[in-house]
Image 1 (cartoon, rainbow, N blue to C red):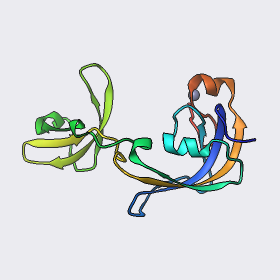
Image 2: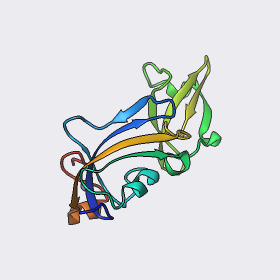
Image 3: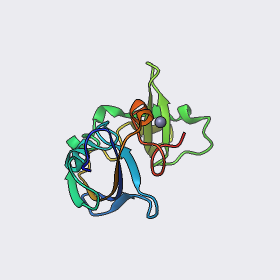
Length: 161
Ligand code: ZN
């Protein structure tokens, strides 16, 4: 079986940035499982995995445009420190769900703290990064109807709910 849309694929992976630092990796004992063809992984990696088989290993370099996007300066905002009054202590690197006026919520990261203001960044933490994935394909199986309805993989290495 080859990787195609509507397959659940289990992979072991190591993700490194352009400086060669490891940013993320799959659990040694349990591979990461995802539903192929539903944008559950970055587009640049999904494209390269299409057509591959169990046992294949590949190294994929993904430019920001096919990864987590370019950095959008408009998503960096200074807010009054009083906006965090309810939070016991804040530090650079903390992440919050911010609710927007339109009811959407967005994950923001604190990037700077001054006496009266806090800088928050709504860009994905990996925006602007060129990413390298070392991937080994462990398992490929057809997705269940429920998985297709939900748009993600269930079971080991997938969603639990
Ligand atoms: Zn589900």
